[in-house]
Length: 580
Image (cartoon, rainbow, N blue to C red; front, side, top):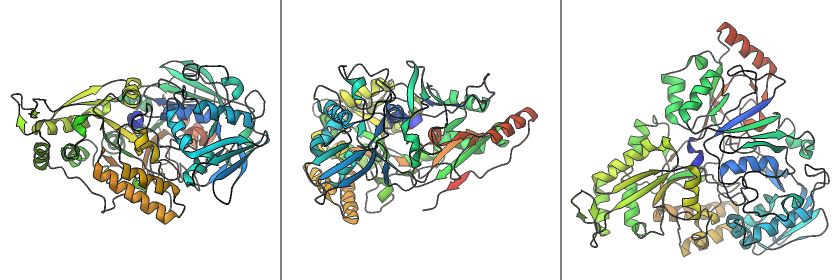
């Protein structure tokens, strides 16, 4: 299942690629071929079936495999554990045949027993797998094996999304997971799987190191040639963006996706460090076709103050995105109109809420907040003050939120900014639904946007559901059902636009901003494809630098010589455009 992924923790996360050379700043040797990337904080669990977050998915996809996967050059399905598959004429039955060579790290074959065990584990109501269980409950009537290599998914309804839920089904080793507490025993470690890496070392909240298996079976697949080139992958937990930048300049960090517009402009235009001037570090802004998600202020509609649409509209009118873009983000972004920007982008049919404090005051008054207390904060007829707690997990968001807070204060809305750890944020938002408003960012869902897990009414009150706003709308539920059952692509997209129009009108989220490119900095010693990233790669998929790049011996030597002689390396274009 490729549901939309919460990227809120990822907003200010950077990745780090290093070789484990003999000294800080010396870079890796060809023999010591390793890679590391940094992440802001360790999640509560590495088991993404119960803690569905982007970091756990990074680790999980290197240990475990799905039946099929997407090709990020073509965006079409290709084999992984399953060598072939077929769809019945009525589009209700999907049959997959496992590759005869697919095997676990201990050499035993991957069989349909493992698939059935994984399915039953997910469907067990005592396990915290509600995101997946809800999807499979709606998708499948039954899952059964014909033999040790042939598995059948029988759909409940004729929905195209059911097929993709089967295609992206992840398979766990029955032998390693049987007899264990699925909710507790796999939080800090994961058993070896069928994928190319295993967990080698863990120091909680400091790092996790993965080690490449020499005998991983999938290297025989044509799609996996020239992948998985690093012997170890070390994932470090580094919370401060400024620390990562200094480490990058020293050479301790080799690769840095730049999530901050300020960092990008400062490092490439205003205050360019010597390492970038001399092309020891290369900057790339890649314009590819990676599907785009959205980010926004997520309001908890379970709470009375947000149930009135006029309140939500008023808060949207108090967000001065133009000012934020100019003062903080160097005009690098475009305001979002759509929950599905890859499809509708700046579609003029979708409303764009202007910054309008005067109209916000009127809407608040109409909603019953028409008196001002002695402290300047609005009160209603019951004497309740209009106070909002804004929950967030990254210090770098504070400048943006402070502008919003100050504009709210001018009309009598008190906003209390509450910075908490990423793990606490996830528990409060996803598990306990204990928040007023928070900053959320979401992946798009592939190959078509996933809408059911985030917006269906029956997900609103489930713990660990992606419907964190608690949004319920029976009319939208019907649109979602129609969308998921529509096989004609233009008609499906038309239904998706109706869903978009409904969401933008109901406004459970105040949409923020986005950009159609990916910004990265990296030390000039890596080999890669000419386009740097694949056509549909967002740098977060498995097909990304830490699996597709390699240490280039010639580039490494040139870099070492340039640093020793304080010389300039040949320049490269910053802009990379991947053709449509």
